[in-house]
Length: 53
Length: 156
Length: 246
Image 1: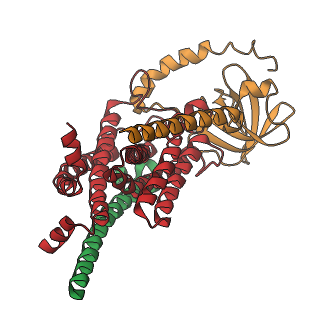
Image 2 (image 1 turned 45 degrees about the vertical axis):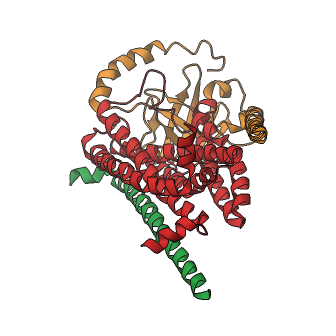
């Protein structure tokens, strides 16, 4: 418990590490999400083109 | 082949040209890009007189005097050549202590620097407290040898 | 030698290669980050001056280093794309920008949070180190805005590569700002004459964080390049086959 207080600087230290974790998670999630969207968009376009033919 | 070499030359020249332009611009604005002036410059009168500015240096050991009952504090800042007295009213950063690097914002008034903001500056060394203690002896000797400096500085 | 490069630059080949490479970056990267975070927060001794507040270094320094490295990738890839007309290089540059921008923001934010208790200020508008890093963030924003504003991919590639190269002069300025001008920010701790000015018990977790973040950045970059390649090649046969295959 004492270690978590970080000698009175807990707010500063933990907010920095929390923010870093958030940035890493958002980066990972965005990269995966965009890839899924791209694959889906291409599939939709191909299907639409085939339906027209 | 030819076209590619031309593009390479164009990109190369553009980058070199830009680097030179940037270097010249930065040289021209060198003084304006300084975050603070040194104590020696202040002692020599080389500071902006018409506006507030920042002075940076080390807090002299034993020079801190706090007024009991208020937040008034006076201390001396040195660059190991010249000294300047600083007065300040307000909360000081956690790192503020004797021997510490500080940057004060304010103006000169009769050889005293009236600060409205005092920031602390730390160095690039990181070590455990135990290591620092064993080094402290050595540092004390160094600072002692640096005490005989004010002969060079006309004002103080 | 050249056939290797041509094969590497071939979109379908790179698309497959990147997929196999991602775990080789992500797994060691996250392992290093887990070790570095634990060791940095709990095993490393507190600093003699800053106490436990110095532990912010374990996220601030890697973020600041990545912000500059990502920009160098942006500029070098843009330059290669301009000279050799290599589409894959432009895809690399376009993919590096958002990740670089996020780490620049992280470096600025953690620096600000660190500056409050230690220096006594969140932000100083006239400090050269702080300003040059802020300009880096705006360069990333400008780069992404420029790409977004031009519909034609080939034109967007060219214009943004020029911007990336112009902005590259800022990277050495960030690094040397603390030596060329007076700054509230201290000089370099790791890259200096006489070796790192840091106890080894503090240094090893920091190195683990720096390498960990570099690997994780590599994995994120590869992932984004795959999406970018897919988008650019969306009208080609191999993408069609690939999408219809699953």
